[in-house]
Image 1 (tube, rainbow, N blue to C red):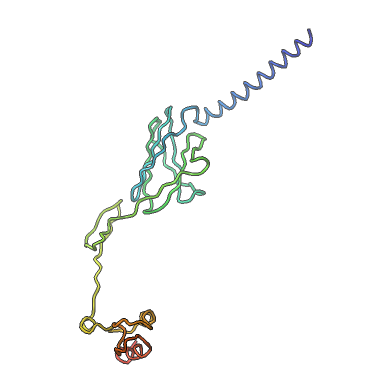
Image 2 (image 1 turned 30 degrees about the vertical axis):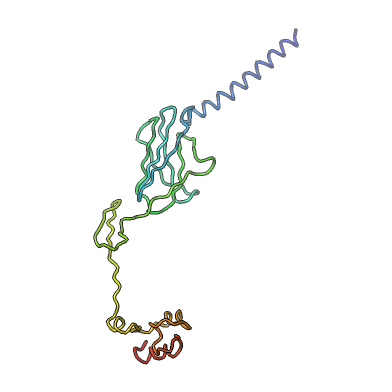
Amino acid sequence: MKNIKKIIIILILVLAGVLAVVGLNAARTYLGGAAGGSEPKSVRVQADVKSATISWESDKESQGVIEYGTTPASLLLRALEASETASHRVLLSPLKTNATYYFRIRVGETVYDNNGIPYSFKTKEDDSVSETGSSGGTDTGGAKVTQVPVQVVTPAAEAATGKITKCDLAEFKKNFGGSNPKYDLDDSGTVNTKDWIKCLEKYGQ
């Protein structure tokens, strides 16, 4: 009889211990704001030139915080949701153009990331500068980008003779031994030291 009582007492203590552990973990999860259903699902990023929108879904309403930065080890910037919701959307702005950012989602004291590493995205390049070189300005992300046309000016003498009109040693070295008529000032068929000397005599350095 005594043995049965002891066994019952031991079973009760074990059961109480298990329930205590389970209850403690549940309490921690609840107090941390990560009670079942707060886990981010379908995390998406829509990146622009100087901003990005992070969106995700959750089974229960919660208020998330995006912790982000330009390196995985320094997620020092924060963007907080305005209120609790199950359909989340957080705008990050302003951001650097054509830069990689890393982020994670915090709900209460619980942090969610991409299997142990931060999520990442890259902002777009600023394509407001026209490839054709047309002049003008475009307001992009609050910064005005002035487009300057590129002009190549050819000296009249060079245009007329097809020869150089100034001495550039670096350019001569690139053409030494070749037959570029632009640098072949003595018309020998080969660009050599004589052409360099002739350039110096005619135009100086």
